[in-house]
Image (cartoon, rainbow, N blue to C red):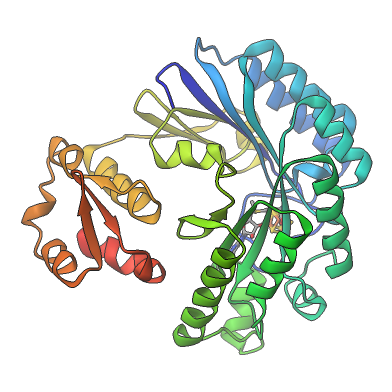
Length: 363
Ligand SMILES: C[S@@+](CC[C@H](N)C(=O)[O-])C[C@H]1O[C@@H](n2cnc3c(N)ncnc32)[C@H](O)[C@@H]1O
Ligand code: SF4
């Protein structure tokens, strides 16, 4: 991304029901409350001034597809009024199979959306029920088919490591056959405070062990490779040319501004985060985060090693970290866990599943 470009994130913190594993900031509130939120969101967008040109816009959640036509139009109006949006900007919206319709897809296209991310998670009805999803396999397939009829660039999310779920790679294959060009598949994370956390503790939700997870992950990677998708990040796969430009901007440390509750921004080297609670957000509560060179080093290693960009040795040195003096680094290079090319180091993709271990050993 060039210096005069910026990405925009819009957070829609509403869901019809909370899924049992989810720790994202989202609330189950009626349309009146959603109207109130959108008023504040539009105000926040209008008060932001920049000369930069918008290269990507991402509507995330929560569930952006829950919004009424009136509210989504209001947000687009504010974006167009306040920003110069590049002609071929990537504009993504996350949708849930239970709240999206053909008519909504048509509306999104009409408003300029050109990329849709469908939250499928699984194509097994038992699993979907167990994790509290409001849709079944049939509804997910319907949503993906409808999306692919209207958009070229469709992505689907699948969660890896759900109880008894051995077929995630088959689901991925099925989704690609339906026309999906991008798959994000994150390993199930168990967050304290979520119903699934309590179920795991009580023994009523069973997690796959590490060996099983490694096999499931390897199967997914191999299957998607055979389907023609390349792995451009630990959890992201795409047909060439369909990589998420919005995510790539995060990974390369580009500028972005986030609007809405809990949204993060990174502008001219400074970070900030809006409050999670709606009332605090309405009171303009912002959490500023000093971007020290320590956090910059950590982020560069964390983001760079998880994707195909790798990490620049010179850049780390300019931040005060000579990685070549780290014994773990030298050991990882000797063992082939990491490799160097043109002044950058990369994680060998065989070790993607243990990326957290490798990254922590370097920090
Ligand atoms: C912001 S969330 C929500 C998108 C959309 N509301 C949905 O549920 O489909 C984006 C993605 O994060 C993933 N996700 C959320 N919580 C997770 C967890 N605890 N572990 C792994 N993946 C998770 C899911 O794949 C989800 O589609
Ligand atoms: S996974 Fe999606 S639908 Fe489920 S609670 Fe989280 S944001 Fe809402």
